[in-house]
Amino acid sequence: MTSGEKEKKRSRLAELLDRCSAPADPALTLPGPDGAVRCVSCANRCLIRPGKRGICRVRFNDEGVLRVPWGYVAGLQIDPIEKKPFYHAVPGGKALSFGMLGCNLHCAFCQNWFSSQTLRDEASSALPTECDAATMVREAVRHNVDAVISTYNEPLITADWAHAVFSEAKKQGLLCGFVSNGFATPEVLAYLRPVTDLFKVDLKCFDDKTYRTLGCRLAAVLESIQQLVDLGYWVEVVTLLIPGFNDDEAELRALARFLAGVSPHLPWHVTAFHPQYKMNNQCSTTPEDLRRAWQIGRDAGLHHVYAGNLPGRVGTLEDTTCPGCGNVVVERTGFTVRRNRIHNGACPDCGTVVAGYWTRQETAVRSLEMLRS
Image (cartoon, rainbow, N blue to C red; front, side, top):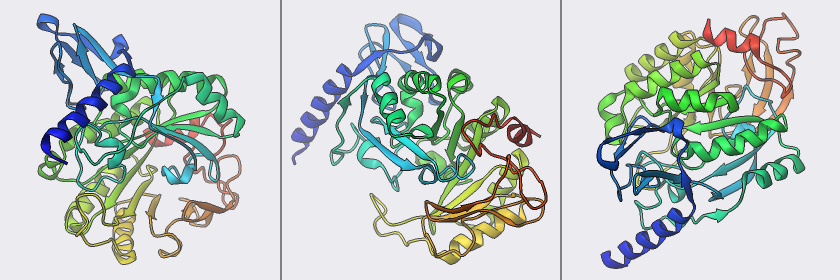
């Protein structure tokens, strides 16, 4: 494909996505000079002038009005909630996962690049399918899911649509959550909180110089993690462990100490990298790599550290244990929950409360207070 053909393809897709848009929620916009609009859906805080796009390329200024993705999905399926991964939310439950297109970062190791890198990478082949929020939620109820999760692309840049979907889902008593890079603003986190329960943050490394190569700032992600806990979200953190990229022992120890300082009850998932996208020549993560990172997390004082993406190859490191007596309370292999012994949010052996949303009906007040303590 020639450079001209690539540009035509991007232009056609941009026109299609622009038709699947609506004015941004006023809570996520600030006025700028000469018709410009400041977008606050992510920490880039783009000042977007008329006829221009934000860094994400899917939020754009149309004659002084910020327009945002709306009324479509690029991915929609039912997953085990452990796949997100949420290990402390309705174990063994089902989640309706939906995603749109675009991202505010450009990670060479992205697992969902075919949808997240739309308008950046001509190899991306994902396309929008029009839908409405009420229909999506009716399907969720019909399939008896426990949660509705915005994922696949970066949901912060499509927060307006997620808010609309979650507003319908909350009417049906469903949990709602984000799978995000956490490059957020206080404004968007406050906007989402009334309709959002769960928030998974990808903490990709603990080095600001490395983070900036991805189009992000470490400090903004760390601030978001603390703000999410303070606002009462249930938060789980994932680090994709990439050999030679973010697996330095001193860096991992600093990362784990930060999380433990936010809350020792904060679950940290260290997951295995498999060569893909622009890192096809990178080494895969081994079970030994995951065990080492797991031990670093436990040494830092985190109660709940999990090794992921190598199901059945890391022994008991996929299980949830009681922070009081150490007994296994949720037993897993990969995305499959083999046994869930938690009773009324607590260990059945010693009565210690285990932080999490263990049922849809549970308010999780005790658990959220534990995160904030």
